[in-house]
Amino acid sequence: MVFNRENHFEFQYLNPVVFYRTVEHGLGSPDNVLIGLDGKWNFLNRFQVYGQFMLDEFKFNELFVEKRGWWANKYAYQAGVKYINALGINHLDLQAEYNRARPFIYTHFDESSSYTHYRQPLAHPLGANFSEWVLLGRWQILPRLLAQGRIILARTGEDAQGSNWGSNPLLSSDTRSQDYGNEIGQGVGADIQILGLDLSYRIAHQTFLDLQLFSRKKTSDDPNRSSTQGFLGGGIRMNLAQWQNDY
Image 1 (tube, helix red, strand yellow):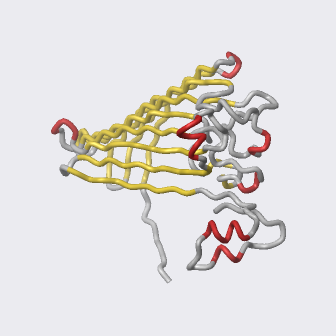
Image 2 (cartoon, rainbow, N blue to C red; image 1 turned 90 degrees about the vertical axis):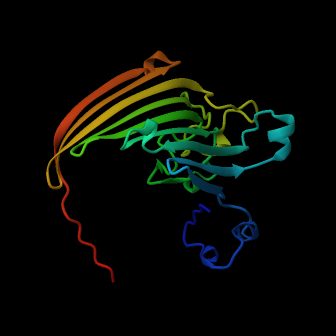
């Protein structure tokens, strides 16, 4: 339940035994309600499947019968699998993940009640209106040497100036460009490719020599938005002790 009040906190939401939707309706339904679930299953001592699902608004006929791309059928989900000691190689872990978020999810007619914090998306850096593949690998090559790699492939739709195609949670849903025909990637479409490799070598206790390679390429339907970036970095890292007081 995401809410905004000008002069007070909504104390009814602090009731420890409450049906939030009932309270929200009693207040005149001014707030942003999201429902989600997540789960995982470990099996064969080497595999894990996991997933998440988020539902913002839902209308059965529009989603399953008429299928007109109604703007307010807003949902997002994640599905992934992890493979431990892959291919019989000790300390080689692989992970594949798929993420998908429909346009306008996390938005609200009141911009201050969107699913954001300090004007940053709480769920995903791309906001909404995207689909994404994430491939990760982690291999302890030697007792002192660790390698981690990632490949991210995403398709997203951005807003043109003066339009709202559902990618930016900070925009009011009342400013949407259309009610029907909404689909993932609408607006100014863009493909994003990210490649990364991190190497870490332990040279002493809690002291590491790090090397990072990073590449990001964005190919947009608007050539002015296309870009390519690369990064090469390295350094010495020392993990210091952390003191925590439990009162």
